[in-house]
Image 1 (cartoon, rainbow, N blue to C red):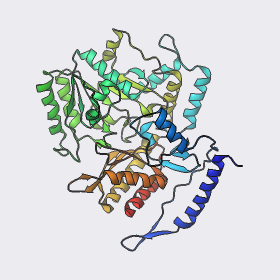
Image 2: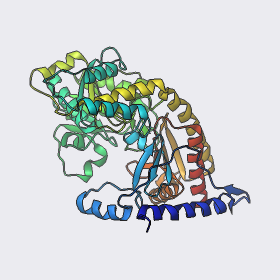
Image 3: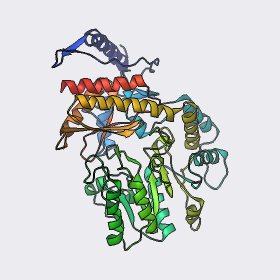
Length: 476
């Protein structure tokens, strides 16, 4: 008898053959009498290794038993992903999916990029970890290369294990340096899952009984739904009001994402960050830029998202794409501000461990070698144009926004009322998965399709993604 996974693969091959014979022909007619061709996934020369592990149904039962969480997995029938290669992932049956979301989660260069894999394997064979008590060039080389990507003022690097830890450290540094306690964040932002970062994460604040004294949430500068439209200066006035009436005139810091990720790929209203920067400085505070999702060339026009706003932060936090999947984060600040951590005793045991540092340095090299920032600009601009064209065709699309390969598509039931189409978003998410495209969802109302693929995404991939989205919307 054949192993179970081979039996399943054989069945899948039969289904694929039927799929090609039937659906690569003409699909059902649309309203105008035209006829749709089912979108065809771009060619990709990689054959996944045979899988002989537990199947999705068994894993789901064990996950519910041993890994209880309110988050995930996606889909009515969750995928068991067993292999990844560049912008694609493969399930237990060998089926290929275009990953248009994993880039924002962890992968910047592409799944299992050979240069990053080699760096991890080679370092693991040599030495996996040292603490701050010893010297090793790997972590120092990475810190030097990372600092070179920032404005000249920002040269001091602290490595952490995650974005949550990076943001926790950044807020602690701001409080120690300024001598003040109050932190201001933006409603709808997201900064992590520890106590202080959950307090600063106003989007989910109402879902957790986590009371943070000295944490204040400013009006969200949302150009699509906000009360002041695209007038960033008017939103900034709320930050001034918080300082005047809520913090006695002084703050430790202000933290914001350059583009809100979990919040639905929401770009901040033009002029907002420069106005807030000036306000925060006058109140004695530090400006913290959360680049966990928007950094490392993802926005295309700049290597860091804050650069598009014309401001230079006092502290920058990094994670996710920094290690292409390796667990690592970082805080980058000025040498003067960094001194506050030398007055006590701070270190992160595994922050900047050698294996993750080797991965991080390889990521920086790959971004340069493969010109991934330029690719994010070229392909991202092309993809956004196609999504905007799709908005002209489908009334359910209320807004298309974002930069480079960090894009959001907000779905609404009524464009005038902007009624969130939450159920329809889930339906489209499911149907796109069935057709081989994985996208994320986000936004406070859960009605935004998040598109954030690995930076090696191609125009052919963009065409396939949009064609699949078009097809699913046409069938609704």
